[in-house]
Length: 434
Image (cartoon, rainbow, N blue to C red; front, side):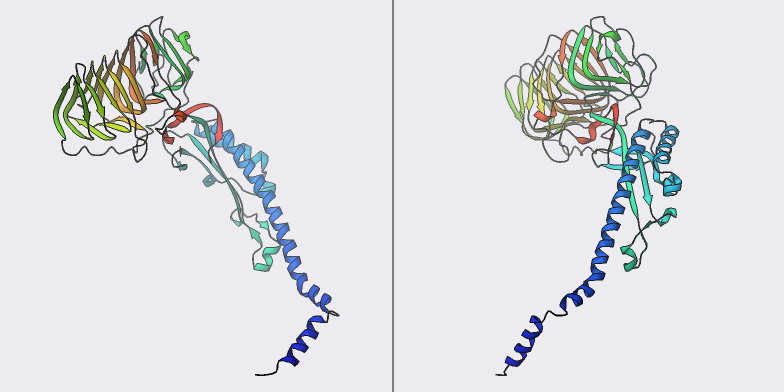
């Protein structure tokens, strides 16, 4: 075995010899320490500039969104804010046309798309880079072969969004929220919105004893008759809201599980499937739906002096003959809790249809999506309603009868999730969306 003693002795002496170590170490580490110091300066400088850009982008987007849907005014406002906070002499051309966009914000996907016929958001992008001829100098970067940083700040803003509760979708006709009898609609947590631009007869409490209490009541057009019975007062809505479930594809109905099924009296349990020729539940029948998807086609879904119950269900009205007819009925349904149709409890094809709810106890927990359906809701007394929340998207409502109709809206208490894409109701004030 070789003798390594001499080598170990020499190495030991070298390690113990500190006479010139400090000077050598200082010489070797000086460039590194200087580099780190320069890097710290660069990072601090970049952070300050990034903060300034972001605060200006936020302010410009918020100010511009307050001018929507007027595109010209929104763009002008954003440019004014940017110029006041980042003068060209300081930052160069920081707001080119490509950096200032008007478009649509999708709350579910948290994405912005420029253009569109109903803009609801403004996106502002501010940059410091060679693209605008005014780079941010870099001290440490020169060691790495670059003399600048590219820094960008982006903000998307629009009117504050609240969840819809009752939504009348028709864009032009009168009476899309129409109360013809002495009915009191009590919905203190519910936002009511009417898309129609009819100048003076969209929301119409025609009876002197018709009252509505909601969280907000808005219409693009205006109202008629006893508007003093609305609490809070009717507001002008800022813009038409497009169908928030436009991308929802209803599943195909499939083959018939039953044809022309008529149930009368007694207790019955139904399984998911397709009910061709409609489904009629009458004369004291008590029907329970197992969890899942139900399709009704070729005839109405009738519940007449009977009861229909189900949890974790969705009913698809698969053609324009599958209208709803609830008369002196009890309908207690809660929507799907998970999956592609989470939150839905009833959904129809997008065809013109007429639906009637008459003197019934309706507890529909979830989204009732009847896009082109006219709903006539005739009330009597004060029917119980234990559904934690209901959201209805229809072509138009007509309320008649008497008594008090209560509509609950507290999604946070429910096991049926409220779809984020339905948070579309504009309210006073504006918010940063991204």
